[in-house]
Figure (cartoon, rainbow, N blue to C red):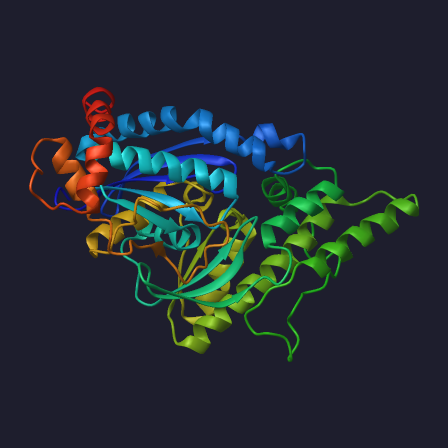
Length: 393
C-alpha cells in the first residue's frame, strides 16, 4: 500500500465542496462541506451562492481531509480536481485552489472529468474496475450509459438524457408535491409507504423505434404534474405516497431496463451504477433483481460515495498517476461542458516548467534549461518558496 500513489482530490462541480485523500484504491479521508441548506429556500442550486460557498469552505475542508487521512500535504504524489462538467463558477473555484496547492507543493496537477470520477469511485468500495466497465450514471445533471474500456483514457457514451436528468425530475416532482429541496431523498422515503402500481405513468423512449440507450424524463414529469393538478382542481386529496412510489417506479424501471440491455448487447457482465440518484433504495433493489436474472454482477458504491465527493476525484487521480497519464498544464481551466470522452485534461507537452520551477525554487534547478520553464520559475520562485516554507510545513 505504501508504494501506491497518494492523491488529494477536489470536487466543486455543484453545491458541495468535496475533498478526498486516496492511496491507490484505499480511501483515507472524505471531507465534505455542503451548501444545500443555502439553496433550499430557492428550490434549486443558485450558481453564485454555490461559488461563494466553495470559496469559503475550500481551505478548511482541505485541512480537515489531510488531518483525517493522517498525512502531510508534502506527502502527496499529485492533486486532482474536477475540471468539468458542472457549474462554471463553482468549477473555477476548485480548479484555482488545486492549481495553487499543486504549484506551491511542486506536485503534478490532474484536471479530471466529473462523470469518469463517478465511475472510478467504485474502486474504493469493490476494488479495481473490470475492463470494460458498463456504467449507469444518474444524478441531478446527468443520466448516462457509458462503456469504459479504460477509465483513464477510453470512456464511450452509449446513451444519455435528451431533456431532464433523472435527479432533476425528482426535484421538480418534489416541488409540485411541495416536499422541499432536494427531492430525491424525500420521494424515496415516502415511496416506501406507497403503491408503485397505483398510477400508470409513462415510460419515456421505450418504444421499438426509440433510441435504445437514451433517456427522457420530461414527458413523465409533465404527466405527473398534470395528474396532481387534475386531482387538486377536482377538490380531491393527492395521495402523495402513491404518487411518489408510482413516479419513482417509472424512473427506475426505464433506467434499469436500458442498463441491463446495454450490458447484454455489449457482452459486458458487470454493471456499475453511480451518481446521486444511485443512493435511491428502489433503484438499487430493482437493479439487483434484474442483474441477478441476467447473470450480471452489480456494483454500486455506498450512498455516501454516490453523491458528489472529493474521494471520487482522488480515486481517478490516483489511477492517472498509477498509469503514468500526463498531468495537466498550469493553464488548466474549467470546462462546464467537458465531454465524458475526455476522462482528464492532459498537458500539451509544455508543462515541463513544473519540474524546472520546483527545482529552481529549491535551489536545485539552475542549469536545467533556459526556456519557458526557467523563466516561469524565475518569475514566481519567491511566491513558491514562501508558500512551501510557511503554508505546508
